[in-house]
Image (cartoon, rainbow, N blue to C red):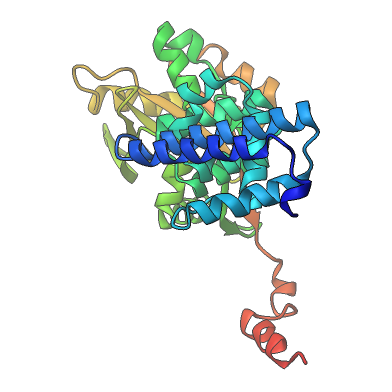
Length: 340
């Protein structure tokens, strides 16, 4: 595109944006990310305004990208593609106050994930706040969006409202999910609880990520000596925000009412043997292959200990008869090398 076909006010916009970029570079030491994201939002807004008022086309963005790269050769981010992202970014967040308060706290890469993977403004602001609060990396943010965390967070069936004081019950509810997504596991249909437990412990980083912020691992098959009998907790955690022990019992089948009764027993023992002054009542979470809501509600109705019931999703293993019928990674790589 040559200079004769440019809009008359294009040089003025270019000078204005060049000056803003220079000022941003000066202030970079104070807050690199925040200044950069706000700059990108303001560039995107200017493009939106000019396109709406003057009918600018895509060719102007291409020329603007070339001129900005020429003026600032050492600064990345002024490609035509990124300028179009800035325009979409400004359209997604029309109020600068929201951008300054929350969105600008996230790196530009995080904002692109929010922009490209979510359509709802409410969902975007929810994930923005969660990411700021928990310090998610871009890959973790992507994972949380793709697994639908906003729909799963706090969704477990529980009796927390009845068995815990108000503030504690609300926070306890929020640490639950339904379902939990263990997409890092592959288990066959004949798997047992110990297989599930070993798989989770073998991927403890991913497991803790799925549990959420605040969980500290205490032990697996944690021994409880009650009278002359031995009992073992599948998984025991301590939640530092709730200031309580969290007992997790794993089941590879559907929820049964007797599971809740046994968890109630476990929590009574943990409260007596492990809980110290300053600890809040222990919480139990039953992770089952599935559950029927009405059965869970009846099972929890008259129990005195705080218990939640959630399902979990895993990757199904291939049936044995198919294991040998699919090509291995090495075979696939060899086939690709043999292609003309």
